[in-house]
Image 1 (cartoon, rainbow over the protein chains, first blue to last red):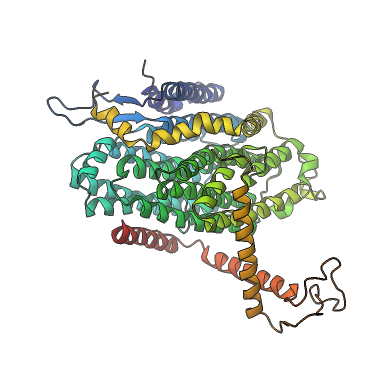
Image 2 (image 1 turned 90 degrees about the vertical axis):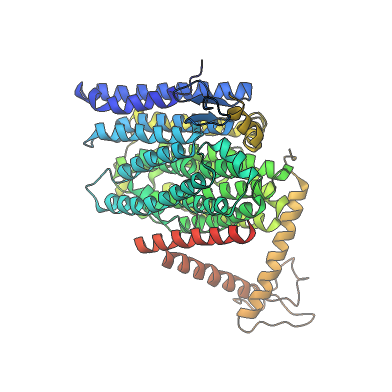
Length: 512
Length: 115
């Protein structure tokens, strides 16, 4: 049975029935939110397992059994098409969203309007899942907007402070402009080639590469670099991510920038354009933005005094590593170095989702228990909140890339491939990590320093907040213990499927 | 897959490190004041605090620039970089839009020329 449609049906139904469940009381609403996200995780796991075990793409056509039109040999219907890269991201989206919803049960307890909150968080998850499974360019745009609009609303959810509203408005204004660039790219491709199906577009662009096709790619890259928070279009991120509630920050930094930016960029570059454009140029464009991103993001993290803002800038820095990996994957397409860089990038997407989710949940726990996220006031927190501090220690060590945690494996692959591709890039990556280390060591010194008056009466948060942190710690440690097995069994097959444009096209045109 | 401790990687890192150190040293000589390059027998000073103190075990490092110039050059350089980064992160919506337009224009230009 093809469970793919349930990846959308479950969160969609769950989101729209959330206000109804609220009528039955607070507990029923919370239980419904947890149940919906748990079911979504189960479906995502099944989709991942199906794709991983068979190494075949899953294709689902809306409203018919075949995407091809009657009597014609080309696809005319909206279709969903999932390879291992999409399935892996669907799994990580569902997992982190599940953790964020459990965390919210306690973290958001004192807020009002929670039926809207749980509806929006489920819609956010739905938008991301839609992006990673769709095989239709306009359908992709619809899901991108679903995800983006839910993000704008969630950033400004706590509207009792200026911070959230200002960040939300800025994010919405510039985000809409970036989305309009993406829409313009889609319109150009549709006007030129007359189709929106990604795999069929790949065929048409391959047969007849045009200037319009190149211009469309330029608009896609511009818009999607913004969505992924690359320098110099990263500034919205440093405003928006700290302003959102911490459970949402975990999803924004851990998932949204990767699914809405990096995944989409990779999918369009590999599956639509593939070899029909000078892929080396595209690769070098992404590499240059990646280098600027990892230096500026990590350097700006060093000078922050707001803990969540520091984590947000750190996300910018880590996006730089992922962009570097993808850029090298494109520029060295078809070589072993390119494969390793791409595997490192995909691996780092997964690892960073876990690490950054954990770090933002830690920041949320501190904010919830003490009421401040100013690092100058949080000295000596470790004595009062040992578990939270330990969680931070694991998250920070992993993000710096300390073995034997998961961040080491993915960063190592990126360093190694960049050193072999171009030693200068490896030097830039190492300098970025030096800044990253400096930023996190500062927080560590704060946590383990002499206790200040502010933290005197602090206590650990409740179980609903500690459990997701514990699960993420275990995931980070486990993934760190088997890095090369995960790389060989999951990441390299993911890269092979991502690069295999013929397979991606044949799954649809072949009438699957 | 490459080996866990790929020797080649370390050679690359070493070469890059030495290149950076050399470039830094040349640059520090240029930007700092009063750098002395003298012949045999010149003593090495640590940050200029104790001019008579030879670094133990490093007596063979003679005739090179003193550490303080590199140190201050590096500190000034990094400080200036942070000042520039800070100045650019001003939170202005108009700047966000401008950067987005510039980025898209640059990408479009690069693709049109070399795509």
